[in-house]
Image (cartoon, rainbow, N blue to C red; front, top):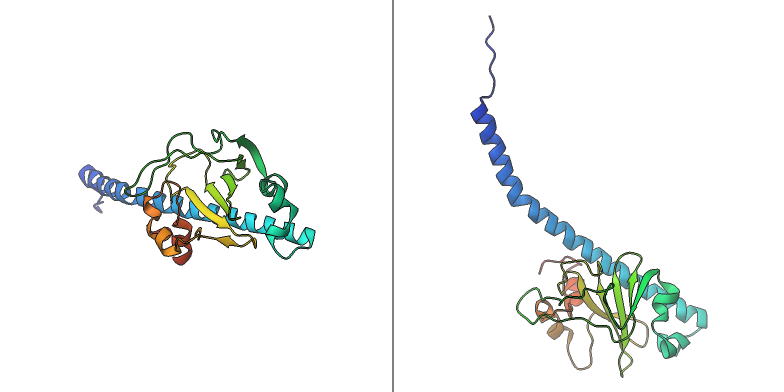
Length: 208
C-alpha cells in the first residue's frame, strides 16, 4: 500500500506566518510607492491642462504671448472657468477645495494653513487649484492633487508652480531666488515650493 505524505498543521501555520510577516513589510511600501506615482501623474496632468489652456487663449486672440491676451489682463481665473473642467468654486475660503487643516512639510519646517488670495476651484479630476498673479506679472499656481483629502503635505499632494508673462510653465518663482535654493527647501515647505523643480530634474520620480 502506497504511503501518502502531507504537510502537518504546524508546517502550514509556520508558512502562513512567514507569508504574513513578508506581506506586512512589503505591502505598505508598495502602497506608498503607488500613491507617490499617482500624485506625480496628477500634478503633471494639471500642469499640461494649464499649459494647453494658455496656448488656446494665445491662439484664439492671435497674440504672441500670454500677457498680451485680455484674459491675462482681466481675469486669470478664466483659465479655470472657461478652459478647465471644474465642479466647485470656493472663493477666498478654500474649505471644500483645499484642506481646511494646516499643511505639513515632509521634513523639518512649519505647518501652515493655505488660503487662496482669490478664488480656488475643485477640478473634475479631484485636484484643487488656486491662481494668483503678483505685481511682477508672475502667476503662482497652487495645486493639491487630491483636493481636501490627505495626506495634505507639501511635496506629496500639495505643490506650487508658476506661469510667466510669456505663458511658459516654470517650476521655480525666480525674482532673485534661484531654482537651486527653492529646490533645496522643498522638504521644508508646507506648500511644496521647489518640489516641482526637484521632480522635473529627477525624471518625475518622487524619491525625496
